[in-house]
Structure formats: C-alpha cells, structure tokens
Length: 330
Ligand code: ADP
Ligand code: TRP
Image (cartoon, rainbow, N blue to C red):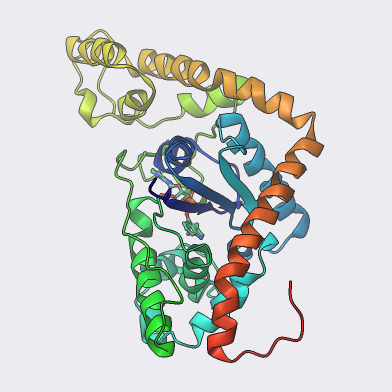
C-alpha cells in the first residue's frame, strides 16, 4: 500500500470568511480531506501581522473553526488545529530565517501589495513567507493546495527547504510539490474588484436575511436598460451566479440576459436565492455547532495534539543537526 500524501493548508482568521475564500480555498480543502492525510490550520500567528486585539483574534479564530466544520470539514478525516498550538513552527521559522537572504524577502509581492493597501510595514509582515514555509515544512507536507496568489510563497518555501538541507548536508526537510489549485477564476466582489476582506467588497458565507439581501442588491452593474439584451459574460452578477448554479440554471439565466426584458434586479434576486439555497444546510449546522462550543474546542485540542506530535518528529533531527542545545524533551 502506498503511503497517503500529506496535504497541508492554512487560512488566516482575520475577518469573516467570504464566498471568494469558499470557492478559492475552503471548498478544495474540504474535498481533499478524502484524498490524503490532510492537515488544516488557523494561521493565527500570521493574523498578528494585521490584528493587535486579543479578543478580536480569538473571536475570528472560533468563527473560522465554526465555518469550516459547518461547511463539511470532518475532524475524523482531517487534522484541524490552531497554528499557535504548534510552537515548533516558530522554532523552525527562526532557523529558516537565519538562512534567508534579505533580498529574497524583498522580492515578496504579497508584502508590497499589503503595504500598498494600508497594512503597517512590520517585520512580521516582511518575513511572513518564512513562517509560512515553516508551517508547510514542519509536517513534511507533500501537497499544499492554495490559490494562485500564494504561488510565490510556495516557491520561497521550496527554496528554503533546499537551503536548510544543503547547509547541513542532510534531507532534514521534504520539498513539497508545487500545487496550485486552479478551480475557479478570482471571485469578484460587489464592486467588481477581486473579492477581499481588505477591500470591504465581500459577500460573507454566513450572512443572511436583510443584510445578505442588501449586499447582493449592491453588486455593481452597468446601466443597460431593462428591456435591452445584455452580455452575461460582462456582468458581475452573472459571474457570481455561475459559481452557485448548475449547468441548466446557468444556461437559463444566460438566455434571459441575451433575450432582453430581463433586468439586473431580476438577476440579483436569482443570485440571492441561489446563495441562500447553497449554504442553507451549512447555516443550520453552524447554528447547532455554536451551541456546543466544548465540542468545537475539543476538535482543536485533539488536532493540536496530533499536529504537535508530527511536528516534533521533524524538529528533533533539526535541533540535533543545527547543534541547538536542549535540556528537556517535549
Ligand atoms: P482576503 O483577500 O479576503 O484577505 P485571504 O488572502 O485571506 O483573503 O485568502 C484566503 C484564501 O482564499 C486564499 O487561499 C485565497 O487564494 C482565497 N481567496 C481569497 N479571495 C479570493 C477571491 N476573490 N477569489 C478566489 N479565491 C480567493
Ligand atoms: N498565506 C496564506 C493566505 O493568506 C495563509 C497561510 C499561512 C498558508 N500559512 C500557510 C497557506 C501555509 C498554506 C500553507 O491565504
């Protein structure tokens, strides 16, 4: 029997999750729990680069756990945990940092983007890819399902693993395969730009009722009059409808657009109904889970134990090879 591949991915608990996160990342994570030995974690050390409010970070962390469990992450199949439950991660990140040329970090596009979007230019943000590399390497991961925007960070990770192995002339770290999920194009936000927490243009997965309706009705469209034919492929509302609708529904709506006499208001109502239907079950499940936070915390605790055990088997030989003195064992 061939050994199952280790699949690893993380998501930052830095705000409410939106449908871009769902179609771009979470849906793939949940599907892939069937295919390998999956490790999924809440990247809360990473969130500290943008959130300095303990209560808020804690709240977001629990929100993301609830979201994943409600959407179908099965803790029997995947190891689900908080990054801060695995201190070996920051230990490895430090060691990798000592082998990282400043010039490599200076090429980081995510850092430049984030600073351009108003985040403070702190050292944690600058060295974010080193911590991300440690996240991946500490479990000897094989596959890292992430969106296109994470490609450079995965390349940096592979590069750093090679540097450590060469520096100590041993296979201390496994170099993960390049694995970029190309499942959906970038999901547009209500203003037509990439949907992102930092642009305030999101449709949140677990929004509902009046608030969801208001957001969906605010999706920007052009001013083609109701009676005129419209091109569905140039419309944000249709781009969102496509994510939720089956083939038949998609064609029906596209035909309505082309025919004319079908306004953007109609399309938005269609979209609202589709979103509500798509997440209805998950929404109910989330409400049930909220009533049993002890169970939710147990999931994280057990996931943390498993993740730490695995991380320690990778970290031990690294301490030895690097000559880091240790007077205790975990
Ligand atoms: P945000 O831009 O809202 O801060 P993150 O950068 O935390 O989102 O992204 C978390 C995950 O969700 C990443 O894997 C990313 O690829 C995916 N993702 C985020 N926004 C989108 C989007 N608009 N379309 C597709 N995938 C997205
Ligand atoms: N940088 C990722 C994001 O913003 C989150 C992340 C942190 C991650 N560590 C990781 C993703 C390790 C995959 C593997 O989405």
